Each structure stands twice: as structure tokens, then as C-alpha cells.
Amino acid sequence: MTCWIDKDGQRASPSSILSDKFFGGGAVRWAFTAAPSLGLPPHLIAFVLLIEDKRFPTHIGVDPIGMVRAFAGNIRGRMRQGGSTIPQQLANVRRISGSGIILRRNLRYKGLQVANGIRYTLSRTKVALLVEYLGSIYWGRNYYGLERASMGYFGVSAKDLTPCQSFFLAERIANPNRFSPQRIRNLVSRPAIAALLQGEPSNRTDVEKIYREQLTLDGEGKR
Image (cartoon, rainbow, N blue to C red; front, side, top):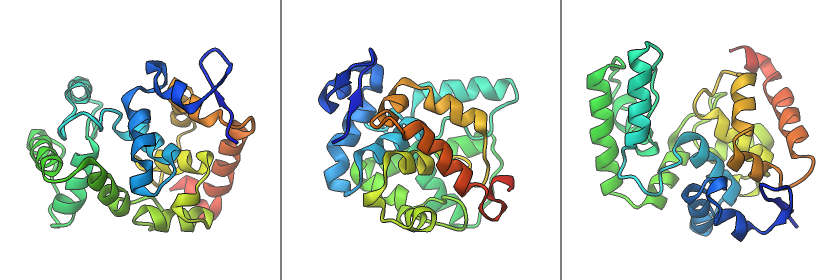
């Protein structure tokens, strides 16, 4: 049985973690609620939301807080694509990339993202959005779709992924072919992610082992 650890280092049940804002609030709670409908491990869904779009359960396709942060980064000359929600990313895959149109990451690009993100959210349930998203995006090594990525990297179906394997895949989404040790350290230090990874004592070591194994195959970590 999974041993969950609360923020004080004590044993805790999943329900107590989900009720604590310290552990990611709505994103983690929604992940555990939606897991049966998705047929996926709740920790996988939680990692994807916490890393990519933690306000996914409540926004309408646009995250105002994320947009403000991305705008501030853009002013400082550091913004690439920050602030994109899961619906916006899905719209990019379906509409922008699929049409062969290459748009510069400027105000027109962001405006199109916002409009498509809202439209996609209003035309689908959140569960349907996430299913389509996970089945469409690129995960590295020419793997498109979660199931192919899970089988390709680990030889198991996505429904059988461990917490460490789930973290690896969720972390790959933003930069599938790039490896940043600092980014990984920053992510695993986040309270909600750390809590999910502390389900077993060996999980931190297992995460490091997975990266060593996967990102050295065929020079993956150098691409």
C-alpha cells in the first residue's frame, strides 16, 4: 500500500493530502476524482496538471495569472511560450501545427492561443479535453500520444505507470528532447510534487535512475 507523507513528515491518507492547499489544492483533488473516468493513474494526471496547467480544473481555457507572468517575462525578453494552458496547447496541436501554419510568438500568436483555448474549453468537458491532449501531444523520441510514449520509454501501458515514471513523462511535455537538471530539481522541490513522489522511500532515487537510463539512450539527453 502506498505510504503518503504529509507536510510535517507524518503518515497521511490521500484524502488528507487532497484537502490541504499546501499540496496543490484543486489540481491534485481533481486528478484523483477524474482518474477513474480517464483510466489512468491519479498521480500521472496530477503531475501533468501541476507542471503544465495547475488551474486547469477551474479556468475557461485561459489562465489570467499565467498570462500576467508570461507577459512580464516577455517584457524582460525571456518569454517563449509561457502561460499556455492545456486547452491552448491542444489548440496549437490541432489547429496551428496541423494546418502547417508557423506563427511567430508575438501578440497575434498569443491572441490566437487565447481564442482557441476558450473555444476548445467551451466545446468539450475537462475530461474529454485532457484525453485528447494526452493522446495528441509529442513526448520525445518520435512518440505522439501518451500510450505510445509509455510503451516506448518504459514498456508498460500508461495505466500501469509508477509515480516516478509518471513524473518523467509529465516533465517531458514542455521540452521533450531537452534535459535540464535544474528544472527537475526545481520541480521535485515543489510541495505538491514532492508529496506525490514521497509515496515510497525510494522514489527520489528512482527518479534519478530513470533519467540516467532514459536520457542517455541514443544520445537523447544531448538533443
